[in-house]
Length: 376
Image 1: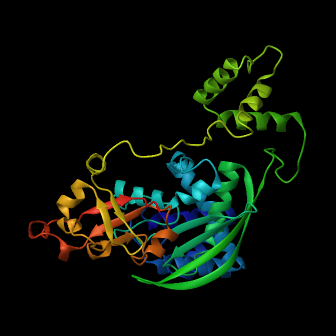
Image 2 (image 1 turned 90 degrees about the vertical axis):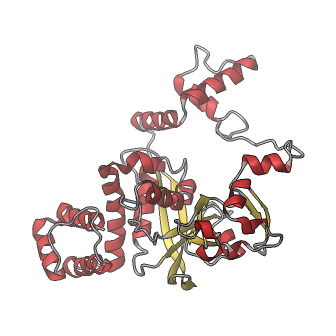
Image 3 (image 1 turned 60 degrees about the vertical axis):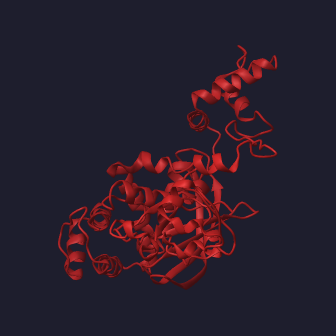
């Protein structure tokens, strides 16, 4: 899409000047400007990247990583800052919700808006992401894409987001790289090892300092992370214990520190849910209350379905029917197997009905699409 090429042009002009861009684009044989929502061939972008490597004298992975960092800033300047900040309260949640963001934007704006790593055409060929936590605090980020050779953009974008949104520096290195055969062809599967280190919020990010300015910056950052409701709840909780969190002698910063450490060192927003020993609603009420839910086993055999989805797809009422006989997975682009669903358990799935299995009255209508997450 034109937005991607416009971003690349902006990076070159801003860092190396108009003359460098002119030389680069002439060698690549492309126009000077691009329409934001116009679809351009991938070859144009790859040509620009290739010529940038030659003109600037740097390897492709360096160019792509630099482009990734700049692309993140370019997205923020273009009005996507608030949307990106809502993806999660930490880096793990941020990455975990990328697929959901892509799917939401493609639905809401009919594939004519920016997503974090690409634009989504109607066939939804966006990359997919899966993240795993490791015991040592590091993460494994799985990146799946049918566009080969662009994986180095990912560390650029993720590191920029980590630094800007969560004040942490990260390092990412490729630990595995394979090609997997999927429904739409071969897909590049890259596994990154992500290690992160907290940063002290000073202007000199590479040096720790105990200056008063750094302490003030740190205080403000923590204060901004706590909303008014959290503060009020914390105050009330301590007052009930007969120990006010705001005695006259306590500074505002000590008050905030006390609120953060409530509950054995956990943030106030963290909690341990309480589950009932049994459900207090019968199965009929459950199926009426969640009319589009489906329950299936490891063999994809349907065990339970909501009343509305049964009405639209009557075949689901057949005992022992397999879910993949009536639906196909549109996103992520994976085989319809229990192992694939488990791999992307935190991603949003899009199921689409198979036309040949629909009732005659429905066959001339658009196929039903169900969007949601899976629990296992």
